[in-house]
Image (cartoon, rainbow, N blue to C red; front, side, top):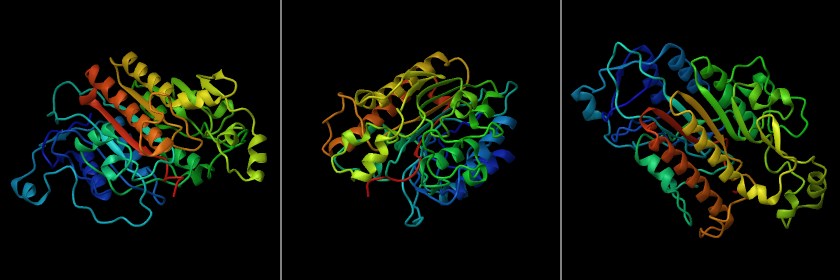
Length: 379
């Protein structure tokens, strides 16, 4: 279990030392507040490989933190704030990643500590400035800003490719997607998908007794053998593809080129799945507007159901990928139109998940990671 107290430094065992080196690589600073939180910009060069390897070691061998308080000389040289001074990472920086974990570092004890719960919230095509902490205007993100205020910030973090399927492949396997034959965004009826020969993060943690669930956009192949329940997830609710692989997409866009309209009209129906069965044979516009709410409700119920043992929860929002959908409780509420409404609903979703963790006494032993699959589609 990885836990952290208020100190701005760590001295640790060999695995924790690797974690420190990992933090150094991605320009992370530990927050004074005692929660561990990350915001990062995404570029398009490096995968999550280092993070996945680190998590693998922590879950399979255990991570034991010792002597958490840094020596006085170290305290003088390290900033005592959540946000450190950063050097620019380059023009390819895109969206923040945020991670929360529990406060306090336990000393070695006779009983091994409980493994941490893991929550990954993955948005689709969200931009770097679409969070209040990073200068959003016309809408607010109080829950993401709260995460930012409670921990550390990564401003230099990278995805494997700036496109849906490849980025998700790297996230769940820790491998370069090209190595696994997944390039770009997979379309409906593809013969390519996530191979059963690869171990996903869900399959990895299940070996340690974790319950696993995925709610949202999968996009790693829509054939049965490629779907989430075949790759380590106990529960799944969501879409097999992006919302734009949908024949109803042109109905929401007034300036589509005729050629693109013709292509999209030929797409098969886009179903919504509940497990390995179809919840909807064809997504409707009303369904599109409820996706964020449905994913959130399922996530909260999963947390409640599994509060007594470790779990891995992967919430991959379909938004803010176009076409945009938002529920009535947020429609027309922001000063930035539909896009601002969508981001505010995603922030609400984050708040619901954080509140559920706190309500069940799990927030001190849960990592919460928030990021996007790549950069914005609006430039």
